[in-house]
Amino acid sequence: MNLVDALTDPSNLLTVFIAVVVFATIITLTSPLMRNSNLEGRLKSVANRREELRRRSRQTIAARGGGTLRHQDEGLYKNVVDRLQLSRLLEDPKVVDKLAQAGFRGPRPVTTFYFFRFVAPFVFAAVVAFYLYVVNSFGLLPLQKLCACVAALAIGYYAPNVYITNVAQKRRESIVAAFPDALDLLLICVESGMSIEAAIQKVGAEVGASSMELAEELSLLTAELSYLPDRRLAYEGLARRVNYPGIKSVATAMIQAERYGTPLGTALRVMAKENRELRLSAAEKKAAALPAQLTVPMILFFLPVLFLMILGPAIMKIMDVFGKH
Image (cartoon, rainbow, N blue to C red; front, side, top):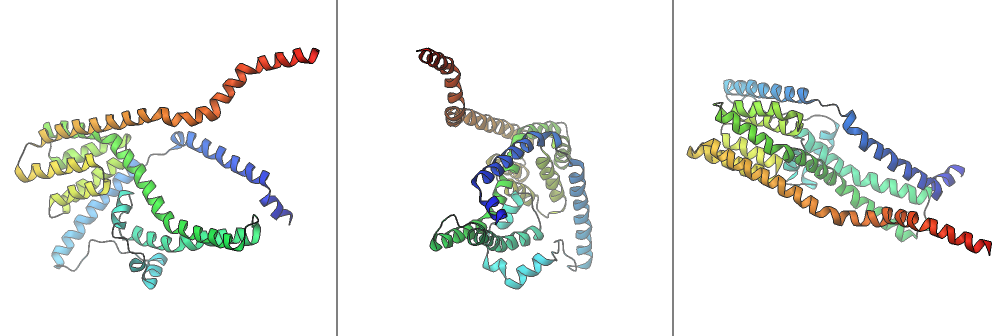
C-alpha cells in the first residue's frame, strides 16, 4: 500500500509532472545541437530505389507482365490486418495520401496504421481502467469510471490519425520554408540549359542542407520522371504528397509548360515570385498574431514579478514603519 500511496500522492504527481516538463524543455532546446543529418543516406536510398524501379520495369517488360513494381508486405501486422479484415472494417480512402504526406510510402505503413488504429483504443482503455479500478479511483462513481474508459477508447481510436497529421504538418512546414529558394535555384539551372530532370536532381542535392524533406521529395520526383509512363503523373504525385497550394500551382504550371510548349523559365519565375509572397504573408500573419499570443503569458508570468519588484520595497518600508509603532 505504500507504493500505491506514493503513486497517488498529489505532491509526487506534481513533482513528476514538473520533472517531465523540465526534461521536455531541455530536450527541445538541445535537440537542434544534437540533430544528426542523414541526408546523404536518404538520398542514396532514393537513388537505389530509382535504380531498383528501373531494373524491375525492364524485367517486367521482358517477362510481359511476369513481375511487379510494388513492395510486398509480410509480418505480424499484415497477418492481423488480413485475418480481421481491418482494411475493410477501418477503411479510410485517404489513408495512403495522409501517410505519403507524412513521409511514409508503400504498403507496409498502411498495414501498420490499420494495426495500431485497431490496437490503440483497447490499450488506452485498459490503461485507464487499470488505474481507476486498481490504483486510484479518485472518488469517482462507477458510471464516471465507465465514461472515462469510453473516452480513453475514443482517444485511442483517433490517436494514430493525430500522430500522422502532426508528422505531416511538420514535414510540410519544412518543405514550404525552403521551397521558394529551391524554385530560384531551379530557375537558374533551367535557364542555364540543363534539362528539367538534371535541374531537379541538382536542386535536390543543394537544398538538402536547409530541408532534408524537400531534397527527398525532389529526388523522388526525379525517379518518377524516369520510370512513369506519363510525366504528368510525377508532378501530380509531388503535389499530392506535399499538399500545399504553392507547390500544386508549380506542378500545374510545369504540366502546362510541357503540354503546350510554353517557356518553362517564365513559368518558374512567376511561381517563384508567388511562393516568396506566400512565405512573406505567412510570416506577417505570425507576426500579427504574436501580441495576442503573448498576452496571457505576460499576465501570468511577467506582471506579477513586475508588481513585486515595484511594490515590494514600498511594502517592506510600510511594514517597518508600522512595526516601530
